[in-house]
Length: 114
Image 1 (cartoon, rainbow, N blue to C red):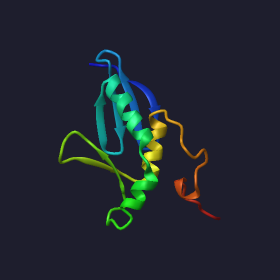
Image 2: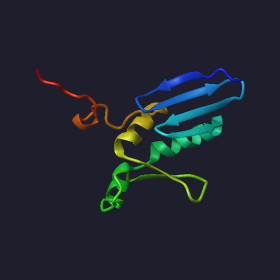
Image 3: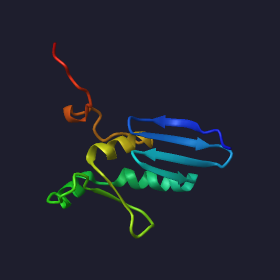
Image 4: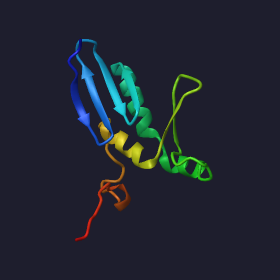
């Protein structure tokens, strides 16, 4: 049994490391990826290069809310994200956010006026 070390945590995700197996676990929303160091670096590089504006424009007429595809090696599986999720995933993976400030729509807070 491996004692998992928490590397980083966000609202919807967790990046863990298992020193015994020398493996990373990336849990984001309902997706769990087990990654080697090389796979994590490759995935991080891919996520850093995703152009969310392009995909939002490409699928602007889609019936789905999530328009940013993340391909997998399994032919029948694609991970779909929205803009806020791709930004959060970048933060989780230690990448700098392209915009340093949150927009009002990115703040998940219920405001109650008394």
